[in-house]
Image 1: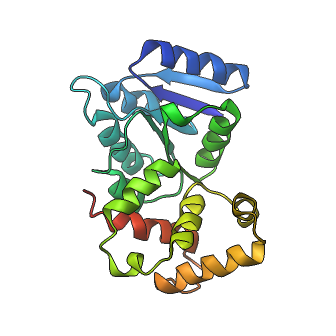
Image 2: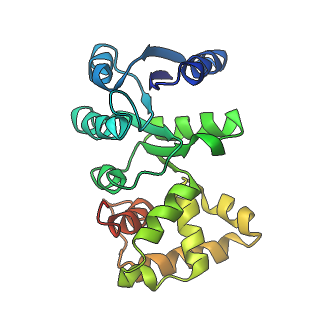
Length: 217
């Protein structure tokens, strides 16, 4: 896997480069927000790891760069890797195409295998969202009638779906049968008015309904 890293903290950045190299992955470039577009254009990677807060203002440069990257390079996987949950642009980022988007919190990544698994999912066009990110985004959108109709367990199932978990993995998390999970997911699709379709991925669309309810705020 070819990777570009936009991370301002030198120790974390260099540590990521070494750890990824040990796992057989190639870091083609490290860059700030301004140089990120050029680095990706010169050597297109499979995925970009982007911190949200980058120079010069350390506010949302990385997140805005991620939005721009997704528009310029639609097939590029983008994994936001931050200490903060920033909801301002995340709904927009996912609404413009959730395939190949991830958002992990640095302090909650305690296992390198889980981090590599998330990278692989994003690079392959999947989604990897930290449960805390999903919780905050869903909380911001609790006023939406369809969302409010979901039960607590349905919200929990949807949070795991947002992490890219399979029905079997969700069933193991709740110590229930896959059939029970399938029923919860069917209820989610019904309440969010997501009929079966040959062209749309209902699991992703269900997550987006939650995120869109935040209004991008």
